[in-house]
Every structure is written in C-alpha cells, then in structure tokens.
Image (tube, rainbow over all chains, first blue to last red; front, side, top):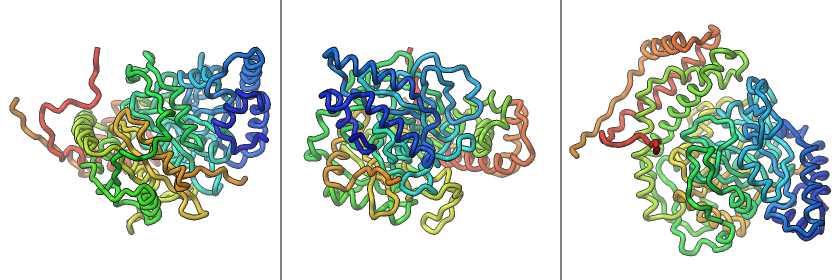
Length: 463
Length: 71
C-alpha cells in the first residue's frame, strides 16, 4: 500500500526492486495532495504533468534494466523560493508572480532528480522568507497538520506541513535565521540546516546572502542523510558554495554516539523559553546521558547582530520593490523592510565584525566538544494570528522572538539537525543538534541515536 | 600589531531615530502611508536597540568583517 507514511528509503527500495512503480507512487501522492492539502495549505503549485512524465521516464529506465539513483521515485516538493522551470519563483510574494517563469530548475532540484527523485510541486512560505510563523497574506497560512489552528512555523511553513501531513516524504526549505528548524519543531519533523556554503543556493530567490542556507526536511534521519548526500557538490553559480569535496553522511549515521563529546548549551539557551521547551531538551540530554553544559559566549549579542544584518540586507535587496510596489507587500514584512532601509552602514559592518569575533569563540568551543544541544523554539506552535506570547513572565511579540534560539547558531553557519520531540499527545517541540562546521555527520549520528531511542520521532498527522 | 579595543553605541533617542528614518525614506524615494509609520518606527527602534547591543561590545581594530571576498 502506498500511503503517506512511506519513507524515502522505503519508496526508493520498493521502486528499485520493482515492488511498485514510480507512476503508482506519483498517482498516490497526487491523490493525497488533492485530498489533504486543502486542510493544511502546504502546496501553492502542484506539478502533476511533470511528475507523471518523470515517473514514466523512471519506470521505462527500470524496465530497460538501468540502475536508478538512491532517491528512485521519491516524490519531493520545494519551498516556492526555489526555481522550478516554467513557474515564476514567487518567494511567498504577490510581486514576484509577475516575474517571467524560471528558465530552469534550481541546482538542488536538478541534483535530487539526478538521484531519481520526482518533483511534485512548490510549497507555501512566509513572504520573502522574512517570517517565523508560516503565515502569508497572499496565499493564506500553511497550517500545522497536528493542530490546524496553529502555526506551521516559518518561513518554510509549507515544507514542514507537507512532511507532517504525509503529502511527501522529502521537502526542501531555506534557513536564514531558523526557517528550516522552526517549522521542523512546530510540525514535528526532522530538518537539516547544513553548514553555510555546503549546499548550493543557485536558482533560489535570496533573502540575506550572508546568512541564507538551503536544506532538507524528512520524517527520518536516514532520509535526511540520503537527500543531503545527493545534493552536495560544488557549484560556481553560488558564490559561497564550498569547493570542499562532498562528505557522504549516510555511512556514518548508525555509528552511535560513542566517542562524541556532547554538551547542553547554557547561558542564553537556558533562558527565554517556557517549561516545555526545556523539558524537551532535558529529555534528549537524559537519553544521551549528557550532563555537561557549556556557554556559547555572547550568543544573545550574536542574535542581535543577525537581526541587524538581516534587516539591512533584506531592505537593500527589496529597496526598488519597496519604492515601486510597497502596497503589494505583506504589511508585516513591508514595515520591517522599510525600517531596514534606514540602517547606517556602520551598524552592519560592526555586526559583521562581531560575527567574526563570535565565530572565533565558537570554533574555540568546538575544540572541546563535538555536539551541542539547544532548544529549537521557546515554545510549542502558537495559534495562527497570535501576536504575543509570555516567556518567563514577560509578554513578547511572537514574530521576532520565535527564532531566539536558532539565530545565534545560523549566524555562524553551524550545521544543525532539528529533531522533533513529543512530551505528550499535544503539539511537538524541537531540539537543535548542533555540530562544528562541515561535521553534519556528527549531528546526524546523534539525531539517529535519538530516533532509535524513540525520543525523537516524526509523526504523520491524522487528517 | 598594536591594537585597541573600541566600542561605540548609536543614539537611541526617538527623535534621532525618527530623523534617520525620515532621511532614509526621502533618499530612498519611498512613499509611506501615514498609517504605516508607527509600525515602521517600532521596527526601527528594535533594530537600533539590537545594533546598540552589538556595538557596545568592544572589538579589536584588526578584526575583519565576516564575509571576506576572495578573488
């Protein structure tokens, strides 16, 4: 039976063995999207004709005895800031819908399809990725599949919702300040934000070039690793893409945590959250037998610096659109961007100089530890439309503060696996498993150990 | 190399911030509806507070900005 709970690994294995064919997987996926997507609003475009054609090509290749890739027949979808040939790359906006259709797919789409995967559509997101909620005034919010009146998280909200609703087993999102990790936590799925520069961003609509990353969402750690491995590789079309050789992670994920030095992040990461977020972290630390804690120095200031750089680069990117079409923006995004146009250059340069200082301290820290654990979000998913929440007795605005624990990590480009943790039958929470630069394999090993223990798991919502 | 740690925090008084924002809106050629302004002011104040928090931290003169261009 082809249902929404099949993993990447299971689908690829069944298709490669001939137990099922790719066309049947695609038809089941399209049928599930047609039935369930109206409830969760994860998809903004469904590329049905293309998916059927790709599936038929794959089935023909198998019939000829050709070897299929590690993602053979795996349906996937991408955040709608990632180019899909023939569609305008809307990036959650109204304005971009007037762009010419993309002339070719983004690099990561091409790499996934080269590995046998089948693109089935584009996913909802917060406008221009300046968002932690998953809300969107133009396309309506993507909804949390585990509680439809709650946020999916942003800005890759459609990606998290599509995975948790069982619409696809693999999705791509982007993460500038937490936009893969937040929806992973709110929707209860696994997400990987790789090291800055590891995966090509070519063919994606930018937000903050200094901080932008792309990465996968899935319902298992092995599925993340397979997709991540298929997407690695140099790309001259992305000026920050690394020329390091690909470092496959899948062979390492079953190695367990023996030999890894793991600590819990204290200081900034031990404040600013509610009791549930720290309970989830404690549960993970206890499962791993971790008693050590450490401080990432000045993490709160790192968050502030990320905030300034984001506002300035985002404003510069959109200045002409703000001049020409301000009324066509989501007001919540527009007002932040306009404010960003007034940032003096010295503030940005100083934030980037502080970033250098912080990076040096973080790298020093990784001399004595391999993996750091921290909460992903300060609370479970708020309700859609909720504008404030109370953390440590203080009422705070929701939008800028959901990323309080994610921003200091992406600020220096560290690889993170966001793992979903369930304290009860209510909404999930997330824990960030953070590794040193280029050590994605260490984070995936720890995440896999947590998955094997049953502490971290992605559930398909009953819809 | 001799180095000196320096810190500088920007002015945070509302009048200065408003002037700064007025200048950016004018020089950027932006047209702002009056009802947007309170929200924009609040966002700029939040950005300025974040910037002040960063800039009051003393840094060595020779510290490079993080993105370094390589030819």
